[in-house]
Image (cartoon, rainbow over all chains, first blue to last red; front, side, top):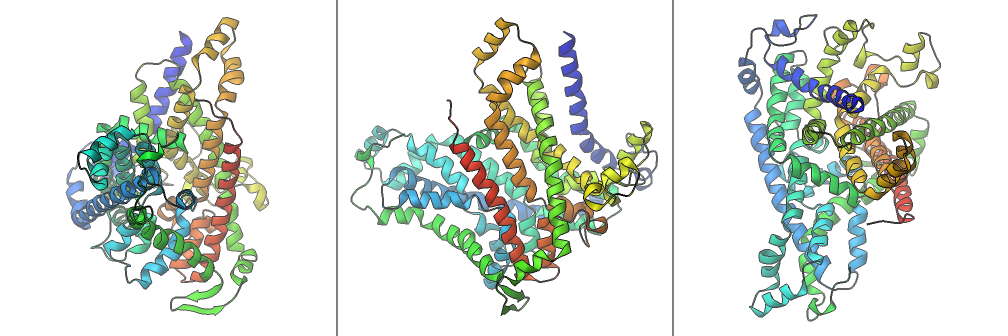
Amino acid sequence: MSKKLIIYIILTVGTILSLLPFYWMIATSLKTPIEAVQFPPTWYPTHPRPENYTEAWRTAPFGRYFLNTVFIALTTLVGVIITSALAAYAFARMEFKGREVLFTVFLGMMMVPMPVYIVPGYLILASFKWVDTYYALIIPWTVNVFSIFLLRQHFRIIPKALYDAATVDGCSELGFLWKIAMPLSKPAIATISIFSLLASWNSFIWPLVMTNRDTIRPVQVGLAYFIQEQSTNYTLLSAASTFVILPVVILFFFFQRQIIESHMKSGIKE
Amino acid sequence: MNIPKGEMEKKNSFIRPILYLLPAIIIIAVFRFLPILYVMRVSLYKWGIGGAERLVGFGNYLRAFSDSYFWQSLTNTIWYVIFIVPLCIFFSLLIALLLNSKIRALGFYRTTFFLPVVTSIVAISMIWKWVYHPKIGLANYILTLLRIPPQGWLSEWRGIFEIMTGRDLPSLLAGPSLALLSIVIMMIWKSIGYNMVIFLAGLQNIPRHYYEAAQVDGAGRFAVFKNITWPLLSSTTFYVLIMTTIISFQVFAPVWLMTGPPAGGPLGTTNVLVYYLYDTAFNYSSYGYASALSMILFLIILTLTIVQRRMVESRVYYE
């Protein structure tokens, strides 16, 4: 009995430590600039000032940053799903010379760490004149080897009888992929979408290197420069950080089971 | 799992698969494969803002060996890895074990511990920088409540062993700066949730009858952990160990966001490998040297990955 109590105490302390920084951000975002810099600090805003949010939103073009990120995230996702579905289908259900070798090469690309790409990626994209364009932020990320791998696993276990029945009814190969194989792989597509959207929303180092103009910047880079410019204005910084993480936090609470389980599976499959 | 041969298309044996693979192949060739060849090539040149200036062979690599900033960044990165990996494994395994002991509100705890994983590093770095504020931060306030002297956190360049012993130590004995350790603490907080769910998955894969047998034998909690859980969890632990090491070698964002600009923190004590290569390329336009640094990073991580693959392949899987 007392052992259970100790477990709950440790977990509750852990929960508090997990949430405290978030609480502190929200509390600061609602304080007046004077109250925010008081020491000892106040645990909650005594005169809540929600105007910090509108002020932060107006100080930098956050509307534009959000639109950029939404656009980049959605187009990247569409690209990832199309390229992964086609490639996974070829790897899973077509026989051709060099299939295994090619698949191994694809998987090998997963071993290259992302930071290795920033210098050559920048030089190559600069030679394409793609720096400071959406292309630089979208096209290189429209293929994801992990997604190909995941869909291939799903496509491989679709029974042959289904394919035969569909072709007898005059269904083309592409039609089979789109109308039968894809709907049967919904869990994989959900996992792919979650990872792709989260990665796009939170991506930082690549867009940091590839953008110089405000009009093209996604929200994380916009926020990073906002933080640099307003370095000591902690009420505005907290308000801006709050609304930047809000969409992900809302999505997380709605889909937390799927999100956590996707991460679980991705870990085991490696 | 074998695919029945009959369903494979035989008539157009080559054209069709190539058409299906073409989009992926083009993108991978141009944006994954080409950059690796390119970074190797650029690393052999003195390469500035206007492109290649002259071939220097392995000059850029030799330069790294005699560059004290490079060694500092490598040392800092290694300190970072040495501190974050075991601490991260300890805390995430502890929480996973507690969550696995038939408690109520499992979903609630799992969700709160996972929340930092999905939130952006930019916002999180901002909050923690504010929490670490040397004069009015929450961290120092909590320390004063506990009657511990306030610390300089992100602006503290002294090594943590120097701070603990209160005397000057030679640089290797001094340990990582408190500034770097502050980043470690934040990143542990951010990644516990991820490793915790991996451990939870591993724990749930341990067959129940082992525990039932142990219960019959009257084994204590610690004996059960030592003789059943820990050995049967070893492949999960190893996976977390290698993945955390690989990811930690690539740390960049918190350094840029919390202790820069201009450069990796107080006296360069948070200057890590990726930050240094970023700085070399994008603040000094030394693309050749930055490419050599990228290759060094690549080789380090490649070695770790190969070690991992070897170890995993030599293991037997139980389903």
